[in-house]
Amino acid sequence: MKLREFSLWAYKLELNDSRAFTLENRCVCAHFERHFKSLEEDNIYRVVIKLGEPDQRDGTTEESSSVLKFYSNFDFDHFYKLKGIERKEFLLSTLYTALLKVCELKVWDIEPFKQAYRRVIEDKFDNSYEVSTKNNRARSMAASLNAQHTEEQFNLVIIVKNNDGKVIFERQVLSEEPDEFLFNGQIGNLKWTSNDILTYIAKDKSVIETMNLSPNG
Image (cartoon, rainbow, N blue to C red; front, top):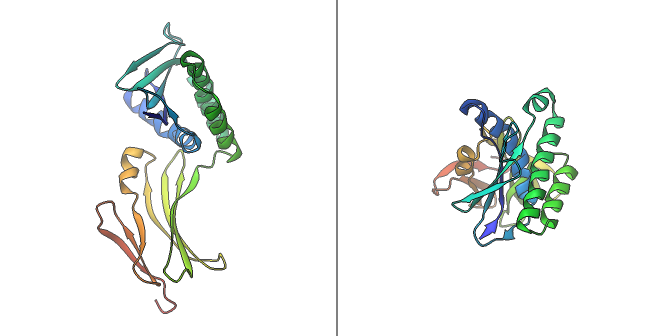
């Protein structure tokens, strides 16, 4: 089983507040996951960091259904006073510090965690990435599906470039709340049906949009 998922859970907050906190921190956790080289573990695929006020369980773990949960203290008052990138820095530090403690407890290799941490910082917390890219048959144009996952929303944009790298077409095809349960199922695929016709296809193979990129289109 591959360990590749990490979450920060404000388990003591009211449901609405806890969900708002999760939506805000997912862009950081997902960014970390994207750069994390998965580890082979016999029975764990996800680590959940359970954040709250000081608790006697802090620093301990529990496991169920292939999920490891680690209890950790979190200063919400301090967090909510922070602004902008400072909040992301605090969230990443919280995640990373807790994961290093888990590594110590479970005797895991810490290098993949260090690399993911460094990569998020190198990206300056901008969780933007290319989902997929497809060249047309003549290889005269390349279409890419590009995602941007922020604390406020998840955006998906189609960008088409010519051989010179010039953007000749751009269209947003999705803007959703930054909840993976909502947006993951809506991420489609690109397909060229001719040198000039690009289609955006849903997971169920239905055509969402057809784009004519010919000079006279």
